[in-house]
Length: 293
Image 1 (cartoon, one colour):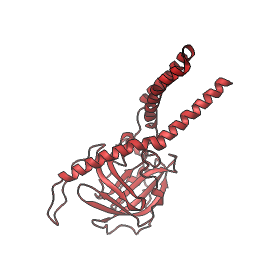
Image 2 (tube, helix red, strand yellow):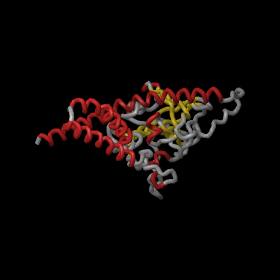
Image 3 (cartoon, helix red, strand yellow):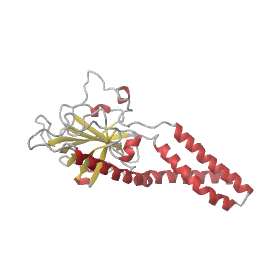
Image 4 (cartoon, one colour):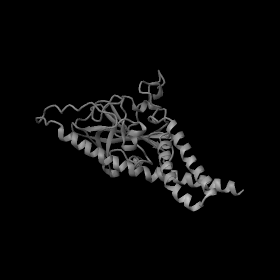
């Protein structure tokens, strides 16, 4: 009974530590990455050639996966984040990520960005507070584009048709719903208003057009980009299993050594090693979760 009790207590502590890592530990790395991305984006802006008034905007370089491509500002939420190219686990750990198979921000069509709602700084944690008419600003190498929120909706993770071209110029933000769950996705759609207003855009508050009924929308996992719906790309299980095994071995060796020598001295020496292995295990295990939780 004593062994069962200790096992249950240890399991509860590990679960608590993982939750703490997800909610707070991941934010530390995100803030560091955001500083680096902002510096990278500022450097790119400084190298963009100026254009004559009324002339065409400068041509932006082709986006590189993981690099900063824009600055996202949502005044109502006090949100200001660099946006990276890509929606894989490593991309969304650093910043909101642009779906590579959608137009770049400000371009014609449906430009889509995914972001975490509860971890890695939770950039999209308060998207549910947005209302029709709220502005969303996206600064790119070309200029700053202004969008206005049109509507919010909740969909299943497989309903990737929300990223399809709807015949207007819009911005689609995706994140998990409800908070602390990956069961569904919250979709915020905003229409481009400046520079240039789409003449045929539906009025604010108009619900989106449903996908064509002649052909059911295919899950994004069946499309060319290989993504699993709106969940983003996940990492392989191998590193998580390897580090989980390593963490368990450190604990087992410390337990065996503690029975042969001074228990507290052994535990004192093993604790830093165990915590480092546990941290790396948490990092790899979290990559198995949906990328935009």
